[in-house]
Length: 247
Ligand SMILES: Nc1ncnc2c1ncn2[C@@H]1O[C@H](COP(=O)(O)OP(=O)(O)OP(=O)(O)O)[C@@H](O)[C@H]1O
Ligand SMILES: [Mg+2]
Picture 1 (cartoon, rainbow, N blue to C red):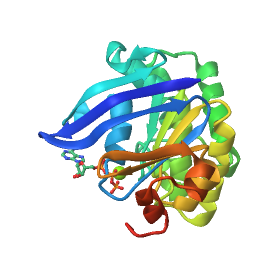
Picture 2 (cartoon, rainbow, N blue to C red):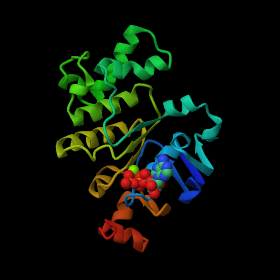
Picture 3 (cartoon, rainbow, N blue to C red):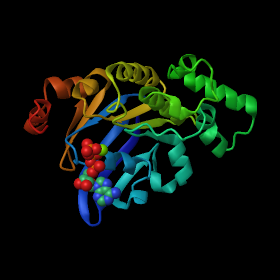
Picture 4 (tube, rainbow, N blue to C red):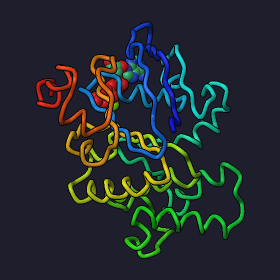
């Protein structure tokens, strides 16, 4: 099933066209990797999918359909809740781990302390942090290592039960060990969530994604099953990118 469908998307900042006539669909409960050289429009694309683009000064034409309805028909809060986002640099709030974790559920109206505690523990366990912090939920999130902070950010995104997780190079600031932990976690999470991950790490895209989209200069050059894209790219530009020619 396709959970998000993008039709004829054109995105611009200040009249400058960044994404051109982009159409593709995202398969539910699969991992889709978005690859392409720096500046090709990957982050712009992600921000279009959860209505963050306008806040960044961008505009788009075309449609983004989430579960059969145009995202512009949804209330912005509901879209952000359904389509969560994690950025390249870990962005914990300078608060305790507990407060980071209850922030969104409280915003969306959950008051019951027992319920909140359950949400916190369940999601910290899923990212392997609950044991690591030895249940010290009142510790400042800023005391965590970079990799732990990033896992906290993923756990925090999960607290409101999103359907889609957008990840913009979530591992690029992390070491091999933390990257491996996150990759393994994403593979598990993809049974329940649709994951869209921008990555510069081609071996990561190949290891974890089911589908890969290659963007070059704002144009979707090729999109398909990851194994097929990597082993038998149809477009020469894809082949050249995978061979490292565009850096
Ligand atoms: N808020 C903004 N206002 C104006 N132009 C922007 C804005 N954000 C991005 N751009 C421009 O849009 C183009 C695409 O940027 P984007 O950040 O989407 O690329 P990217 O593929 O994510 O690159 P990277 O791999 O370096 O993260 C670039 O030319 C960039 O300068
Ligand atoms: Mg980017």
